[in-house]
Length: 536
Image 1 (cartoon, rainbow, N blue to C red):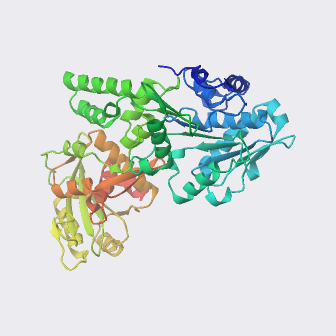
Image 2 (image 1 turned 90 degrees about the horizontal axis):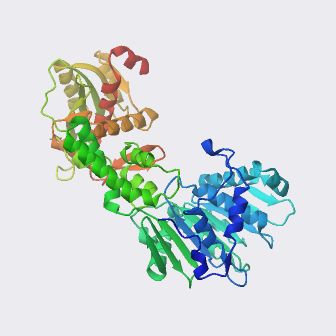
Image 3 (image 1 turned 45 degrees about the horizontal axis):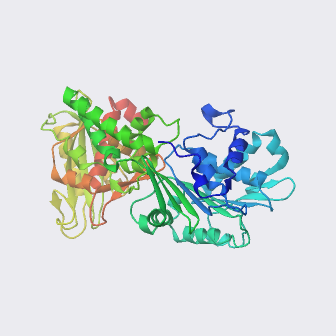
């Protein structure tokens, strides 16, 4: 259901929305397939939102002081904000002062770059505006106004007198510094009756949401204001505080969760029976029915949403936040317990088989794990593990408890020698921290030792490939409760295009999972010794 273009007529005297829509149509876009096209506001959501945002009172002052739009990713958030900032400078009166703010300098830089891009692509705007990228400022040629890119340092904004504050990705404004920045920006408008705060953001973390700036804004507005609820969007209008919030969100949060669909998709690869295929199709339809209404942009297709829902590179929490408009914690079990348990197999690793060994070492009050990996004829990797731990068994899972609080490398080296006597060990993959001397000794005995640094790019690749293999049904284990406990103790935070895996609690250990990642990485890569040696 589309937002109403005339909703503002129920309470406001007029709107500058039509003028802004016309102004946008005179500008051209610069992104990929839209490059060179005019910036046309979509009638089902962008235009109605801006018509309301720019509604005015009989005095000509803006009706709304604070406008918040919570919309999923790829909804042209930054582009819309940048156009509005340029428009406000170009057509504003009274020497407009426009501040661009974001939770990081990098994000504020993107917003500023979009503002500068509209000007560079327009001969008319270039005549009326001066871009000073080296200082992050855009000025009117007549000197009567400017746009300023702000630092994210909150204590630098108390001297401002903004006519417009433009905020990108409000959901990350959680730190004390950013809270101070928010306070400075939203209380700096005393001398301007026309001042507005305009924020666009995706959803954020569920934990602590009720105490976050975004959470408080949205929840207070929806609990105290007038609500207009439609499938996929809730509009709350709090006339006393002059705050309007447009929140795009999944129709059904449970149906929007991609994890059941991912599990069934992996099951279909293993067993493409009619029942499994039908279940996958049913879950896919339910997910689309819930998520698509939260994505009003015409360029967001069902294929795109399904692709994101099934992608192993997108954590379930990321999908919910970025594509379904649902607050979700990015800290979650890196590998779903049900997915891991479904990979249990009774298959044995044949004696004499080629295996890769991974070693992750700890010394004092920690654990050390050895994991060996065998790739079968179907390219599935079978994992086995052995773990020594100096922590109490009640808090850290292991096969051998080591009294005294310190693990020695002698039994670890001997375990690897025993594996070499039973199997053909292609390589021992290790992190040199705590194991460098042992690796040198094993190398002197003729074993191929390959270092894989925990903080390097190859380890990030290894983690991604392991996670992909889990979802693609390409890993097997024997149900070992110790390895399973290390997997269950691991959570992950999304950092850019990679994950940062860590323990749920510091008292737990995850060394067997780390060793498994290392062993799996090389077991999948190596078909002969030559490429491994060349890579090493």
